[in-house]
Image 1: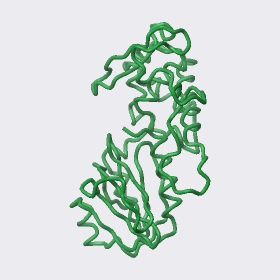
Image 2: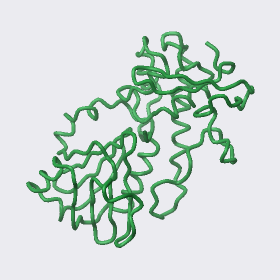
Image 3: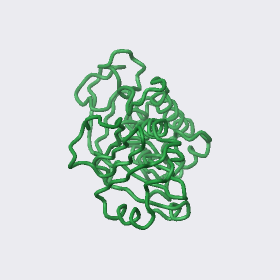
Length: 276
């Protein structure tokens, strides 16, 4: 599943490509969106801005209409110039927004809804979002307080609760716990204030580093592979994620992995650096 940094970059790119342009054509295979297009006509509206909140992407159109999408595991937005060949099958297309210069195409996006500013506040899932790690009004102590309130959760599970902190996914969950020397299966109630502060501050640091603007004004949807180690070597991008059985980059112990939580997401950790 795309994490908050991926959605942030996608929103930034889509905003660069679409903001200020008028939608000249709208196409969708999703009945709920098609009904809104029939009633309220998307073509002719201006794209005001595109932004990310946690793992959700919002496109603001003139006339108080907002297209809200969530990628879940396999969804993605692509940008094409007119006449450019698509990189995914036509059968995977869910939404096409056309302007005079650009096509924005959503492939395999499973959640897509039109909202007004009022109805957006009632949207299930979105209206329960916690504070975003990438929010410009980052409040570290408020985030620490929210995490510490999850007293009966394992810290690995607490970090994935989008109603607590939005944007953190399975990759960062494992990487953050390693960076702070915290076993991901520890209950939050057993963690010190400094340990929780470390997890929150590292989350902010990691995600900001992975959304740094390095692409200039080029229209791209991804600017490089996620990394947390600061290593220039592309094979050493991450500390523990997807490295089961490989040696820890710090102590050389074998990285372990097992499923965690109700969703059985796989967690990776070093049993030596992250002892219970």
